Length: 505
Ligand code: AMP
Image (cartoon, rainbow, N blue to C red):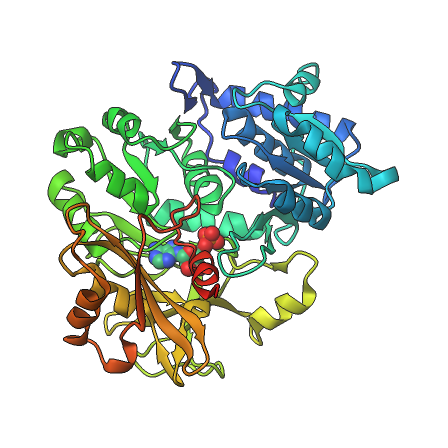
């Protein structure tokens, strides 16, 4: 049996090749037949260029149907797909290209001069460079056009490498997570079933496709279901509001939900056909969960996962979706909470989250030592997240272990303090970090974003208000105010940037 992920996804493609797959904003439609034929042409091109299974293709392009086709073509040819965030600049690109050692790089035309420079050190084995612009045109498509539209998908085993996803690196240098065909197929099948994908579903796809959320979770569920996707180049709240009446499923990061709620026109009528709203990649605030329920009549389903294995937990499809939690371990994923020595903690206590299962990645690309450090005997992967499990089995994320603050020898979880600060009148949001301190080791420091009408809220007022509900050792030594919190493309607060700025003398 061919365990190539493409072959598995294709089992779900509709029998009718004219069935719609990608519905674009300008009215163009890519049918499933178009998808199969166009990905075949690109797969032939990859073979013609001399790429063999296991070779890498780095793609730094904007979201377009052709970018998705390039991904599918790589799967079909057994070539390893390495997507990069288009926001990355010279310094980051230099690292990724040297690390991935690709045979082919696909870039936006405007970046060609920079990439040519970055590819120079490869000398004799210089990778090929092809272009794909934001409208889906370029030398990649031109070179693929003359090829045949039938391609026999290369046989792969479950353990063969399909993709390398570079982690977002909010807590250190970006590492390449190696995901096999089997890892991706296992997660796709589980999510498709757990979230009850069904005939007639239409996915509103507004996520980027260089990341696990948009590329794997969203696209795989839709493809495996043979569903149409309203395929948007980026998230735009007004545009999403317009499209919602045509969709049944939406997946977003929490920021998408707060932006939708900021539109006064967002209300129940727009969601009449919707079946499911899913959130993840960053914590969904319980206030957003509640307001969304009240305004739309829908209960957001929050799930948790990461580049290193796709999704690990999900709130239930049927049954209570509990705010502030990420639900239960998914079928096929085992999850445990452990202390620093790797011993499971007693009921409800906070500890490190560890997972294992068919979806969990094989390790970090060319980093065997780092890989060995992050796995325990028995195949348990240390996610680097801290969490707890309540009596009914719901998992809650408390934060990244690297964000844990140790002040005066005591452990302090930033989330606990952030929740109290966020509930204060006049506060929009906050982030709490540890800043090096000669006396305490680390000093609790709060960065607070005020609401527009709360200019009077100052450091003393915040600390006084916190003193009423938190132990003294948890109180911030400093409160600074900011216009906004730094966030990456997936809506995660970049605490490393806050720490760096606050640590400057
Ligand atoms: P990435 O690999 O970029 O998807 O980042 C994965 C990290 O995002 C996880 O390790 C968590 O720290 C965080 N994350 C993902 N989903 C959630 C969630 N629902 N709640 C809180 N944090 C989340």
